[in-house]
Amino acid sequence: MAETHARGHDYHLVDPSPWPALGATGAFITAVGGVWYMHEGPPWIILIGLAIVAYTMFVWWRDVIREAVHEGHHTPVVQLGLRYGMVLFIASEVMFFVAWFWAYFNAALFPTEFMGSQWPPKGVYTFDPWHLPLMNTLILLLSSTTVTWAHHAVIAGDRQSAVQGLVVTVLLGLFFTAIQAIEYSIAPFEFATLYGSRFFMATGFHGFHVMIGTAFLIVCLFRTMAGHFKPDHHFGLEAAAWYWHFVDVVWVFLFSCIYVWGLGPIAQH
Image 1 (cartoon, rainbow, N blue to C red):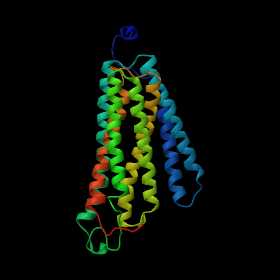
Image 2 (image 1 turned 90 degrees about the vertical axis):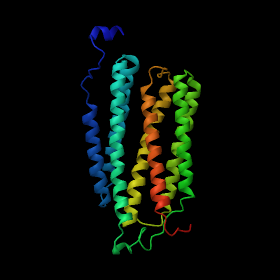
Image 3 (image 1 turned 180 degrees about the vertical axis):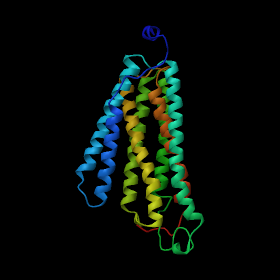
Image 4 (image 1 turned 45 degrees about the vertical axis):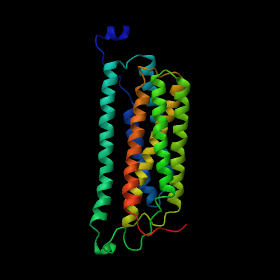
């Protein structure tokens, strides 16, 4: 508070940082490396890009934690701005997934003769939605309750329960990713098909968001163990919980529309 009065305002004027430029460079190298790898290029370029992105995430998170916990820059006014920013970010993510749903429904509601005038296209065998997909749905719904448990434990000042809730949530996130990897390994259709491209792009990007959310929660777990979160100062965990709930809701729509509504002849494994 003394530093706030010394500044004469409640806002945080962020110091110049190299991390946005470094992160953009890592993302560019990753994209170029990924495209090259898909055209039989070497894999080390994409690995270098991913390493740069991972390093950027670490040092950027480190700086934000220092600003929030040790330097006291995250005043109530700053926290309000962060909340608005997180809401806008999730809204942009919603529109991102709207694009994939649009592509899916454009093909599913208006099948062409090329598809056999039906959806799924003629000859495509789909997953049984009441097997692995249902299991993953239950896992994510359960994880939504455990992250809420952790959030409310922090509000109540119960650090031990918050740690327990986050540990369970992280494990459930890892289980979801593992089951989806198994599902992809036994997929009865290829990516380079009309059905496969829509299925893998929609569920694959969701899986990528689950991995990001899991990393987010792991950081929050260590921060909770270190005592960084207080009942009135825990936006990092709150933002992670919002993001995780968003991921859960998207999966419910994916499960309902792609797995259940788009059900065709079921592949036998």
